[in-house]
Image 1 (cartoon, rainbow, N blue to C red):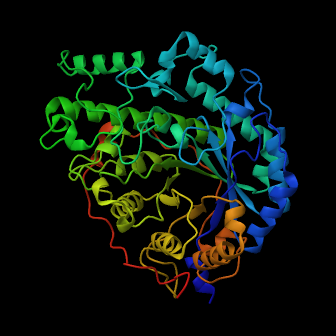
Image 2 (cartoon, rainbow, N blue to C red):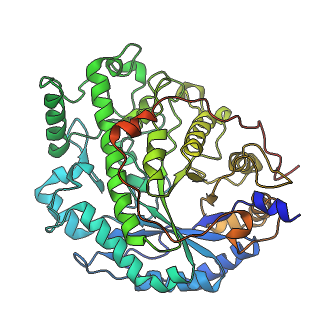
Image 3 (cartoon, helix red, strand yellow):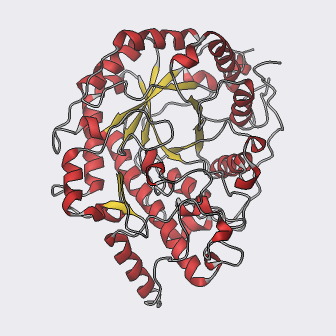
Length: 492
């Protein structure tokens, strides 16, 4: 059965929020150890953990304190698990499932007191303090550094402070936070501003920096009269309630198309710049760099794809909004981490025009077509066989191959999230079976080479891909065919 191991997909569990406290202590070590040993008993491969900017650099610019995280990593290592580390440059709190609050560092927020335009801003001028606007990526206004430099310095410091863990192969993935919730997107659907599902969200480009950039771009294109959208509605609108997104709406005219191309390109360039810095920081380490893309499945079946579009994913029936992201990632040898892998269309209310299964197929297929690896996670905590079976299907869309590697296989899956509810009797039994099935019924395998994953030192990013070449990937392609259900069900 040596060939069956090539179907093995590693499983990681996301650690609880607050495992390192907001004042930078690793407190409940014994509790966590007990939980980690349970994960080990379930043959889980590793854990994912947020490494919060707001905790590490809270004492002032370049005053990093990694001690609590070093203690945490040592405990994980002692338990025989691997680490996926998230460079979390966003605020914790204000998103789905956030019971813990970690704001951005105080010295950063102070700059915002006198210059609130450093934050993403909607049309009505509401500021969002979850993440710095990409409009200031290259403005040296945060204590004399640009945000890109700040993120770069942070990652370099992480590499230096964790070099022994990196050398030992404990840390396998570096997921680079690129926006709110660590995702490459605009904060278009903030619950703390009253958004609720399935609202279309709002564009977030009304800070003075992005306003000026749009004005310049429009003027350069020969349309100085073009302004940012005024007719795209509010957070909880439906597409047909807005002049922008309704049938034959503004989004389809020249002005609308120009704006949406600009808005989504800004996001691509933002991700590309920070990933290049991540690649420099971790070059030569035996890690993979990853970027997370949000699974915005509501209104996917509406012509406008409004909720995706306000988040910066310019994805329509005749324009692929995700494959350019995968192409951009390919130059950094990056992994695309996608979410909502557990969802089925029928679980969503009809009025949301939601299609998580089609969205997952599109994003996974596009990434594979661009020659990059795809990892993923569930969007919401689930403990039922239906959710696990859907994740298993997406992990191997055409099932296992008993004679070698499967036709399609995800790079890894991260389960959201470790907690007492997961470790409860019944839930834990089903989870253990899930891990076993992700491993294609094989024993835990500590050596990724055995299941076809070649661990090589990270190479330098390839030359920048011109935006025109990235945008060639907007040409829609049929997704790969997926089986209707997994051949490795949790309960048969």
